[in-house]
Length: 456
Ligand SMILES: Nc1nc2c(ncn2[C@@H]2O[C@H](COP(=O)(O)OP(=O)(O)OP(=O)(O)O)[C@@H](O)[C@H]2O)c(=O)[nH]1
Ligand SMILES: [Mg+2]
Figure 1 (cartoon, rainbow, N blue to C red):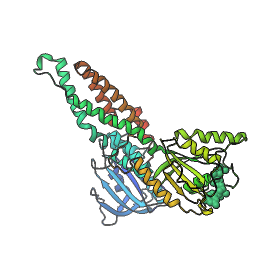
Figure 2: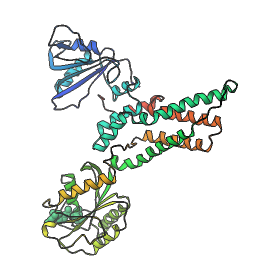
Figure 3: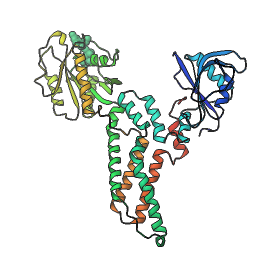
Figure 4: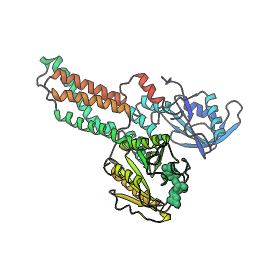
């Protein structure tokens, strides 16, 4: 694993054209390095008070060349992100400034940090438990508000806040039970274990376990299918959502023959959206496979955009699609009558579906009001507006919580056998400690932090 005694440095902002860039230095030499590379403008001394910003120049420690104008902030151990002495230098953005400042800091004695190494140190120094350290990665990579809010809850110590008091009780219980079993003659009163605690714990963990399944669409994308007969505007719809010409659009029915899958955040909602071949009976072998594939997606779809050309009368292909969808209750179905610019001949209201819209993908008419309803429906169905929801999203947490639930099942069968109870409680405590990283194996830690980027 990483060497924890070196002083490490990295550019912590993303490298590119930006106003400023922040270079972080952490470790016992951080302050010394600051003194070597930075000249204060306000005075000739090189005293840096913690938690003060200093304006000055960064100079090359060998040539004395001025590399950039910058601000420097010193955070003294243990009150810093990593728990060590930390220096942050804010220099100009752009590759040249930040890289030259970084190289200079390395010349002054720091080593380039590895992936997630700042957060790794924060974890080792007790600044964050392991679930909080993991939350940093989720927070940085969140693409929707829900993902962000959830990561933030985890970062704020969700697991500890929810579970610590229960595990403190279990930890105490372990001591009492050990005493009772090992030194029965010294224990006057038999320990009365509070069974309710186990049921409360089971309740909380079951909720977390369930939230993992609920989180999959919201974090990995809701499977969304675009269906319709040929030429109704399915690929036009895909392109409109993606905001670029992803799929070929022509007036030849049967243009799309295979399916096209894309991931997109649409109206703040992550979708795995699939455009399909137009559904019709056909003798063309290739098109037939395309149609079968389109139909094959229906069972797993959670959102369906059923597209019709409402400027023409429905035909048997439209009816076939309506028939396929009318009993599908586990998906949110949007019925879109496209080509409104050519008039409305066929009324969608008579169909057995709730959400119907007329629009024109050509002129854009009707698309905004469809988007408004889409957003509202998704918020309702996936409880996105409920701030108190927490989703377990991490597979490592999921595995540990499942193991805990298995042990709880054993305990529930046998509260009276004190040795068995002690054994189960000890196992629960071990699992909890692994969740928070109070107990860990180095390989597992390695796997967690190597997924981070440099600078975090
Ligand atoms: N007038 C009008 N034409 C449209 C509209 N939307 C799409 N079109 C046209 O309809 C034709 C078919 O559009 P596509 O998006 O390729 O339709 P599709 O459903 O993907 O067709 P297949 O891939 O063949 O199944 C193209 O010529 C589009 O330009 C609309 O709102 N109004
Ligand atoms: Mg198409």
